[in-house]
Length: 192
Image (spheres, rainbow, N blue to C red):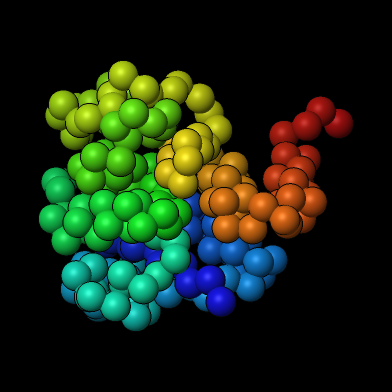
């Protein structure tokens, strides 16, 4: 069974976690586990309290297959060395690593954007938040998630394409269901 770990900081963004975790669990039967900085429950920006399975520095996280960093203002406060090391190792092991909104800063700190297309909450914002990160020249200004190899990035305004991009890396054989998921949410913005 595929295991995905969602990294939640204080004030995590509900709408970013909801799309990706629900799609993975419901449609792809992925086991979802939660990591927080100290293993304590964390409250979202909307007041949802999420229980935690692990601390960010728990060695058992190395066994996961997918690493998803959900946005929170706390990511922009600086690098978490344990998370950076874990992400570098996960990437080296060929695992999926994905960050949305300020969660992209953790990928930048880990050097995962070097030589890879990526996006975030704005090129200037990311460059200011993670000064001189490797790969800044590969930034893509787009409203949709960006995948390059097994690295996925998105702004906080792209939770549905982020969810779909992560799902496509985990289960490319489920393309019909994933495309249907995107189309279902896209209907809200289509002309009547």
